[in-house]
Image 1 (cartoon, rainbow, N blue to C red):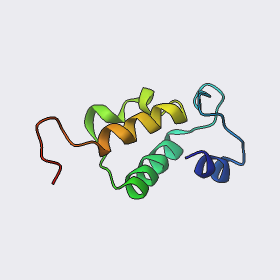
Image 2: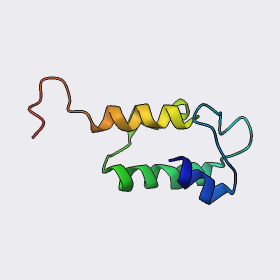
Image 3: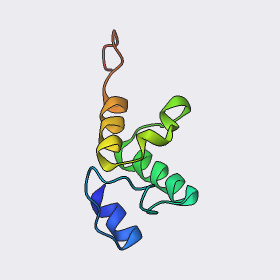
Length: 78
């Protein structure tokens, strides 16, 4: 994720750096990021998962991806 952000913004980002607070993201770029995460990690981001806090830092995005890649409680994972 850090490489994707650096390539797109030409800025080096820290995992805990607030991307919105320092002007690193526009709403258009945020949507491009959602598509990138969905395609790269084979996940679907929708509903409550689209909250800004899930995209504020790389650490938050990693947590979101890990959550969405984990099987739901009670499922067999198949």
